[in-house]
Length: 152
Image 1 (cartoon, one colour):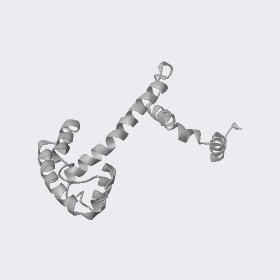
Image 2: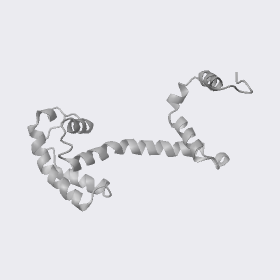
Image 3: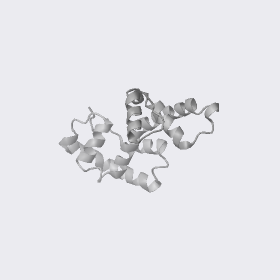
Image 4: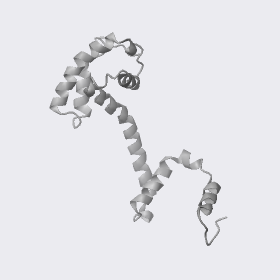
């Protein structure tokens, strides 16, 4: 559980986080606004009972939206959203490049982008692709219109 007291919550850490990891997302005026918001944020959150049992950053983000405080603290909210998307985007990017290297080898070097995208989705989402019944897909394809040759 997060405790928003002066010992554990340091707004300098938030500003440093924005400067170090998101310099393109925060201009100098945004950094000034973030610095000003942090002073008010701590006081406001400590007084609001809805934030008393905040357990994670995603929980904090959800409570900010529910209480509509995300509109009062837009720079803090932006930083939290960026922090929450970082693990997802890093993992997704690594998986996508790994799948692309596997799929687009020397034998398939000249494939179209749409076909490559489809193959990558199937490769990345193997669990979902494995759950699809091939016989059902073939039957649906055959029933969509008449064919010269039957598949089954």
